[in-house]
Image (cartoon, rainbow, N blue to C red):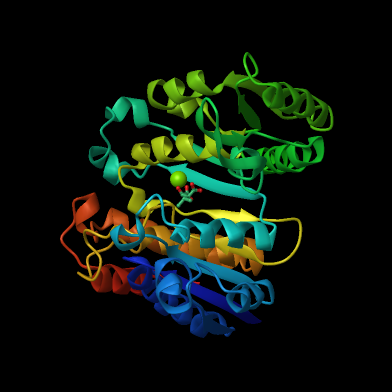
Length: 354
Ligand code: IPM
Ligand code: MG
């Protein structure tokens, strides 16, 4: 097959992990007789430096015209001033909205070899295999009104948590569909004891559930969900939730795996290219040192192969190769290893077998 993939390396360690992953994809393309065409664009701080905006119209258009988009990370201390008018994160939010990728899938798996890298006791981690389906283009991140104003009483800031029923329905449907291919359990996370938007969320989740009688549905309040993620994480299969709740819970869930450096994500819409990125940030403290963990991005590329290119065999081969590297202790420092990015990348390539 022939596929066009836009690369958005971004800032910090972003370029290191994206280029590492490109070499893995090239090895896979060769083995599977595919042609992947890569087009590189700027996003985040590097785009601000060059163009004064975190994502240009041209870069977004290139992404929209691609089969899939692979992103590294955005942001860093250089662009961190909270009062700045242009911020790297605007690029990411603009990209998600511009691609219409309303569903952010963040799978969390615990690899037996790495249980010691997690702060949780090993017995808590046995059997952890969950995926958070985070709503990505609505909710508190995008609701209107949003902004600041001077009033007689003082300066006022407002963000709005807003959802239409159709936005909830499509993300909850995605969660149920995913659960069908897994352990058939959906946990819908909300704050229905306080928020009106959560009461609508719960109502729509129940309506959608009627079409999936073979899948179990439970409703859990977000504070309880945060607690259960560390007290009984193996009890979750598919969690589905609002944008901001999902942002917070997925960082918490990442701790289960031992390192943020391991976790991939896929952002999907109902059509058009998917967006794939590791869930870690730009890690400015280690940027440029060549020691970043490429596995989160490599596993994101596996999701890209699976969901956007429908290359299941290649996706599974890549996941297997990462797993073999982990089992063989071919690891970067964040997960207790001694190898650098290049060596781990080579190890993954060596373990590839279609
Ligand atoms: C994430 C990140 C982003 C978010 C930031 C960088 C805007 O934390 O992808 O989880 O909040 O969505
Ligand atoms: Mg986050």
